[in-house]
Image 1 (cartoon, rainbow, N blue to C red):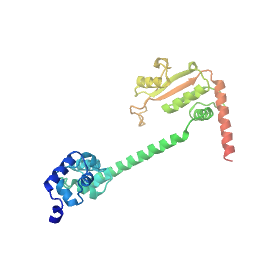
Image 2 (cartoon, rainbow, N blue to C red):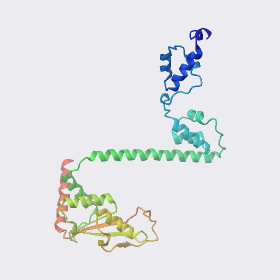
Image 3 (cartoon, rainbow, N blue to C red):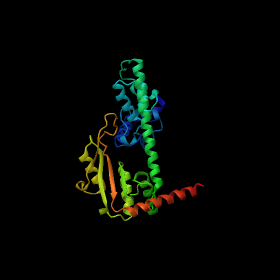
Length: 286
């Protein structure tokens, strides 16, 4: 070391230069090249006590994980629980939180339940992400819909959800009932494609007696673009005490009934479209 230092006769003057350059924001490599210091030990002594400039610090991708691990540890979480929550190794967790106090020991059965619950929550989150990605990819597959495709989609939708005649009861009414806003929007787009004028449409709400009737009416009126006052008399479903209702949350808005006035000709065309689609489907798969 003495030989190495002797190469730099005026060490203090060299240190002053190195410190000045460091405070100007130069990196170790830049200072080394500027002062022609090729010995790392000497360079370390020249820069001793001088922090590196911010731009030379590489961000640590695990900083957020480490901070979260420490936060959870302070809340009393075990290594297993933190590992399930953050998806990182126990060895990393141990390094990050080793200076923190250990949580109180829990009953093994309780600890197992907590770990199981966290694993299940993690699994649900993974499934939700997979579900979202699959739906997004499928939506892209549809692309731009042609008028012909909308014609067939609407005809199939009506035949699945709309009212249909019986051989013994020919009425040929076009009445559509559904609780899904997306289904209602597609159906109305289909009617516009068919040049059905808005004044031929009437709307009615069907809903359970315990729900927010007026709120549901306003929701559907806004969706279809009419005044709630134009709705026909609401059909109220009475409560059956023997049944357990599940549609009781704030998203429950009953069903919207859409009727097309003077719809006999339209009904016949729908029935014809459907029959043609069935024949073609059989031909394609024969």
